[in-house]
Amino acid sequence: MPEAPLSRGAHHPPTAVPRDQPPPAAVRTAAAAGPPGLLTSLAPLLAEWLPRQRWFAGKGRPVTGFALVSATELLAWRASGGTPGLLHLLIRAEQPEPPDHRHGFGCGHRRGAAASDCYQLLLGARPALPPSLAPALIGRPSGGPLDGQTVYEALADPRLTTLLLERLRMPGRLGPLRFVREPSSAIPSALAPRVMTAEQSNSSVVYGDTFILKLFRRVSPGTNPDLELPLALARTGCSRVPAPAAWFEAEPPAEGAGPRPDPFTLGVLQPFLAGSRDGWQLALDALGADGDFTDAARALGHATAEVHLAMARALPTSVLRRPQIEHLAAAMSERLDSAAAAVPALQPYRTALHDAYEDLAALGRAGRTWAAQRIHGDLHLGQALLTGNGADGGDGGGGGRWSLIDFEGEPSRPLAERRRPQPPVRDIAGMLRSFDYAAAVGCHERPQEWAGRTRAAYCAGYAEASGTDPRDEPELLRAHETDKAVYEVLYEARHRPDWLSVPMTAIHRLAATRA
Image (tube, rainbow, N blue to C red):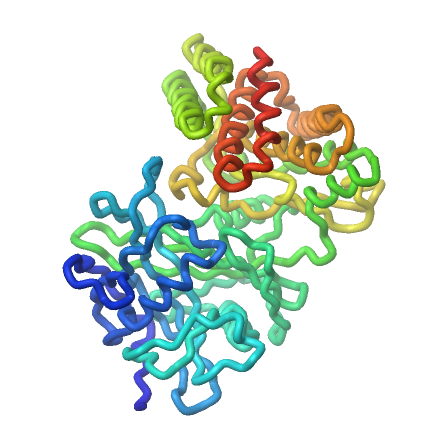
């Protein structure tokens, strides 16, 4: 067939999804200007492939429509040659809105009872796939500019992931895409790529044990905190967080007469901490050997405080007064009621847990205030890496040093909410809950004793570095721990029922503890 190349960097404004004549794949697609038939030809394949990806957020709900936000040809394909093509897409997937959906996300679109999330896709195109790429197959489009090509997940192809690194080495624009490189960063060429398999909500490629490129899959307008916060921390001299070396973003098309939305952050290249081990595995190893983890926890508390202090210096802070505190407590209460309606095991504890939130609100009414700042937003043992020798995290004696990674926050929350200043104790509560999980998984006897010692050591380390002990504000800490445990109960009940006892043990403890 004759070659039908894409127009490089074309924007495709989404239009109304037709409701009367669904195409054969039973997935309606929005018509779009640009390459004729591109989205229509890809939609049946994406409707099958997209929901199977671990980073797809809308599992359990049918995909009812697609809209093309942008399409950029990063590498032209040849219908008759062996050179693969690389196509970058931002695609909006429309689905029925879940019954308990409280927040907008993705591209921020709603059509009645429908919701849509925007996904970043990197598609390779070849006439035929070699055996090594067979597991990456998406399908063969019928019609459109990719007719006759085999389309596949491009990250599985080292040739195409190498091209991504070259784009980041050479900053500039390509259609709606903008590639940026920190002036001080040195990015070698010819670094062998490999895709990491442990990601959940995003995808990552490691280049020669030197750099790691994190690609955000579900994206929305605005700077992603996983770029914003490490950049800000690097400029304060904080060495606890790998500094971005390069990144890329997309400028979304203007819609209507309003202002153009902020760019989408699409990917961040950072140094790869080769040889590091995450705190979760280190804690389980210590538990398996009947070893102590308090020195590591104390050092991790120290590292957390250093990062919090640096963020408070680098970015705006605020003060939570009575209206904000009452709103915070009310939101926690609302989440508790919603979770208890879905998980009957929470019902007996509702009154005691509501007391934790009421104690917090009462302090706000009495004139108590708390500082708020930018935080990590999803801190747990898996987000802490120990580099160097030793597993005690001593930042000295054992030779190890803690770093914090993945500042994206909870991906299920709207970007505006994740970028909002919050009490630092929210991060602390998340780490304390992580210690409980580690104890429940790895401790054969008296897990609560191990968790208690480790939690105390972490708080002590935090206090040593910050001058503020989170245990000195028990109402604030208890409310945030309770809110996190309630979230965990709902998550485990839905996804891992065998783990439900872990957060329920914490619920029992928190309900019995009056600050």
